[in-house]
Image 1 (tube, rainbow, N blue to C red):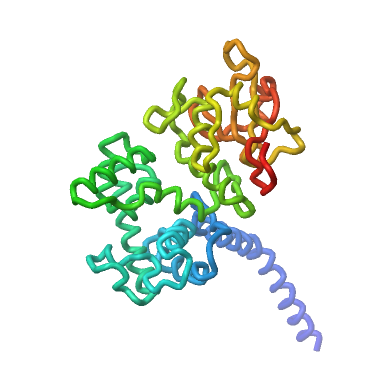
Image 2: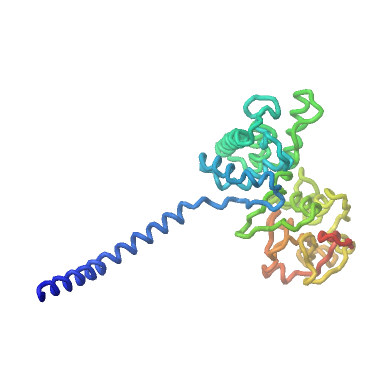
Length: 343
């Protein structure tokens, strides 16, 4: 009996000793698995799924994700869903991605939504592959889904970056070449991107509750993100200065602004910082010697940022930056994008 008890105690102690020896290795193995799992998660991509997508489109989210996964392009799921929304109009169209023409068939020949997605995603992959070869931007690839891949060659030969002006020129050239009244949708990029959430600097600029007019103005502006600042510029062909950009974008919704930042300040309804909402103007003083108080304007887009054209170029600007805080002059509203009356 004593022998059996001793043997049992030895066995329990042996197991404890074995566990103490193996535990660090086991923990290390678990950490490695966790790291690999995190590392293999698909990238988030540049866009998030937009709140304006219809349920008719959202029902295909998993199918789109799976189709893109075959090409390791799953991070583009929000963008492809947005393309589907634009192509189908958000209804129960059978050729949900209008993919028939990409394989040489007449429009709407495809009558299976899943097959339409497979063909559309395969076309999208080819567009992205050519984009990589030519070194053009993603907006060029988006426009090429509508125009065809020849647009990428055209952009590559004209600076490598999509613009509204290039899209319009290409449309006019193709229409003349083919003898058509028009060719494609020159504003296809803006039309698609209204259906995505935008990821910039780790923050999503949420358009979920935005009015249609604000989305039009916002998309009109951000297509010029990264363009150079041009003093006196007021069109896509010349690029823009601060007030010229506001004039051009707000004209998209039928609002005609005066020319200078000072005049735009004078025309605006004055508001406080607490009343500031996306689409309102922020005015600055002393940014250069203009002989008048207001010398710069930006449009507030939320998350403590404005979109403007300044000496660093066109893009998003952090309002907490010390320079802009020191030159802040006031706030104004031309259009109440919340749905109220504008000033």
